[in-house]
Amino acid sequence: MGLSPGARLGPFEIYVRTFPEVSRGLWQVSTGGGTRALWARNGSELFYVSPTGALMRVPVSRSDTWAAGAPVKLLEEGYYTIPGGNVGRTYDVSPDGQRFLMMKAAGRTDQAPIPPQIVVVQHWDQELKRLAPAN
Image (cartoon, rainbow, N blue to C red; front, side, top):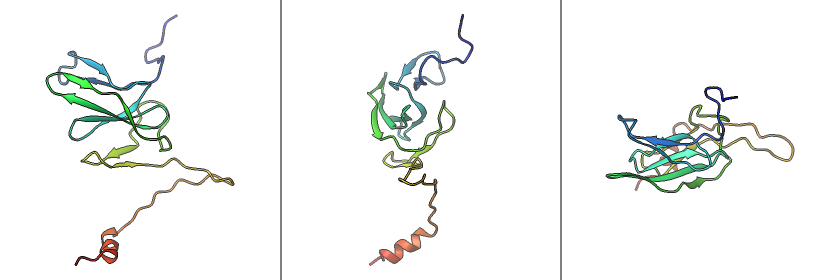
């Protein structure tokens, strides 16, 4: 009895390959599972979501040889993720790699679930000028 094509025995993992010569190397970056990988714009780190929903960071070195550091948890669980495999990304990283845009998972009160919501602030620059006028 064999596995059907596409059957999985464990969690999804994050791997890195050389490009365009994809047959030159394959390195596992995540430990314990991961999906939704995203490179930092400067190429010095890779981000991914752990199976528990935590945002992970892996420092990488791209000098003469490939080297990846140990994954570090950046943000705790509690942010919205899509269950299952690599189906879309639910976060983004600022160009400097210092800020993240993520959706909080819907919470609960003692009485009822809190419905998910998105807050959009229009004309925020005018409010900022009102609150902190230039001298």
